[in-house]
Length: 324
Image 1 (cartoon, rainbow, N blue to C red):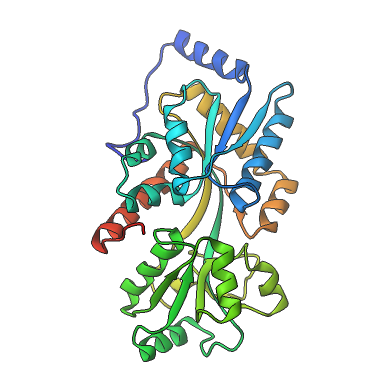
Image 2: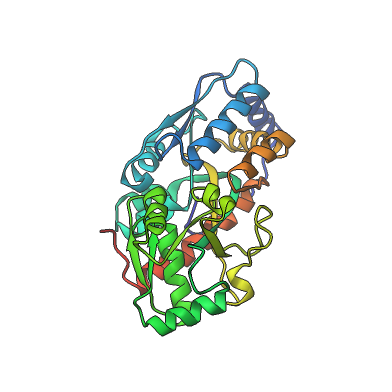
């Protein structure tokens, strides 16, 4: 479960029970498996989900893994669909921190559904970044903080929407540095970057995927990334944490499942995904859209979800952030 009383305890199973679980995992999947994505086709999450679905099918001949896009409600439509699905290994959910955050900022009853989902595999992580035009006066994080202080709340920062992780990461930065800026919400990553290019805002708080062409062409530049470590794709771009100790925000993508899905199936899916994420071809493709493949066991993803839930719950509550 994403949040709650803690990780499910380890059970000392009898040999017959263990054998039954192993047989169940070995027989899975005997029916088509759908991977639900709460985003429209074409974005980074959709691309990643389709890549994993393709590779799962290749590793298990005769199986069928189909991506089903169910955008809406900032991924909560998809989350509720998966939470209500039969826990039989035929439905999985590929998502991002958007699902956790959306439930919080919308004060939605869907938050219970979000909390009930079982973590399977942390597939990828990527940093957010503070993006600006070449003529912006700050080139470093300390210089950005000084410019923000000089403008006394008048510095405008675009982001993909109220309650998006970009928005919350910006609020967290303000709280940890004591600066004030004016967040300007747009209806997605591309509109946010377009506003920056047009000069409608001073800077943008976005990812590295959407503005990658402009970053490589030099028409935009990155001041810093939010991850704990520098991006291997942009190693010359510093992290915020190098100047603001303790500040780190990661954007991840991962696979979850309905609560009650048998452990044997969850473990098998985790093992298959972990093997896929180690394939050189997959590593190259994931890095191609500005992310790093992760993998690892189910507990690793559970730890990330628990930490994120605590961080964003406190930030949303303390700053009274609500969806517009």
